[in-house]
Length: 119
Image 1 (cartoon, rainbow, N blue to C red):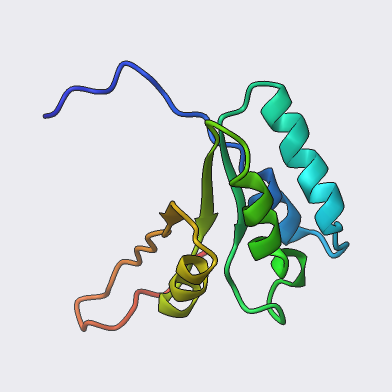
Image 2 (cartoon, rainbow, N blue to C red):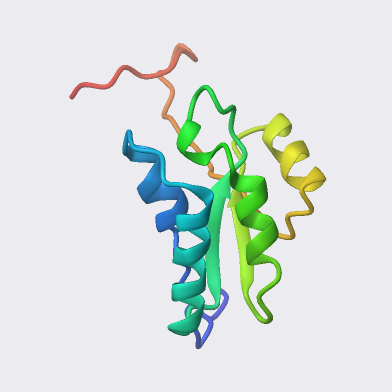
């Protein structure tokens, strides 16, 4: 087993994870203020948004603009979440430097069909 790193990276994810679950849409200006405040407080890794279709998550439709601002801050590790190839392509076109891709695992029944959730 490989040894664990002696350091931990703390990444602010509220701009993506927190805002995607509310119905209100925070303006780009407020998101930029959020990033600026987190950066001023010493945060050096921020997930600024996600490249998903705007009709699915209108709260994140401005991820490209928010990303562009965040990339102007020296020493800030800026990341975005992408769920598929189309999102990854849009993130690359927006010049995102770090794309986070979630891994979804689902057990399969012996028949090869997805297992049904008992809960």
